[in-house]
Length: 368
Image 1: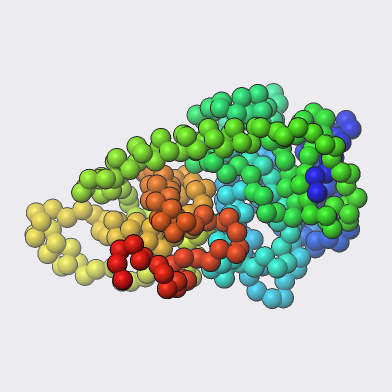
Image 2 (image 1 turned 180 degrees about the vertical axis):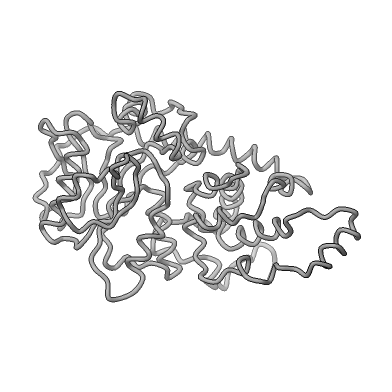
């Protein structure tokens, strides 16, 4: 149902904190996994079971230091487990759906709480902007988009500037920030049974809000422009090698990726610790041999493993010390692969992962 929370002289954040406290007080969940503000002002995910501590919850802060899907997997993948509410942005929830399909998480005892996203900053930019701003950064972002869904903010993370999925529609509770009057009331989309437990008031009938659809249209156009540019860079024979030429194989992109879940990774094993003379032989064969070795094999292997399920959160790009466009390359390739299989990662639990599902009529267009 569509529900409404009147702010009544409270800030939007205070109204959300009260809502989250009610989830604990009514024992709807045993704990909440959500962003919390530390005494130093930084934002970090935390698992909260004490309602009083939710005064420090800040899911509105426009910063994404980690894709919380991996953390939700840790508290849900095995039994025994508690009932946990997870407050996440769209890219995090879509990654959680993919991890569930890979048996790295379980949705059975998770209450999914989706919060509309206007975009996020990387951590240094967020801290700098927050120290310089007179009002909450999240409010600036949302009000700018409500005024003009085609407004640009070049300070946002590159992944957010082309994110065409700012909302997540399949949560038990969606906080519709993009469609709310942020000074008067919050609009929610909530399961009927949950709305009854929370004693939420139905929202009055209103004309359809066009902010979300216009934002999706504009971001999709920007995405396609960026993908075209990336495709042109990697299209020729040495294109992708040139894009990743500065890679130092630090594995940061793999570490922060919510879809890379292998407990034992071949790239962190001794397989690629070659004998000293092997490097010399390669050098003598070519005259020069790039070090560190196997960087392209690393990226191509990782792309083969997870491009189909890439949700475009962009954490890999943020973690790269060489500032390589890792996320943009993976999204560009991923989009083509996802289109081939008519598969959208995180869209639905009912859609099986194509590469682990056999269909007798697959690839008939290329011959029997």
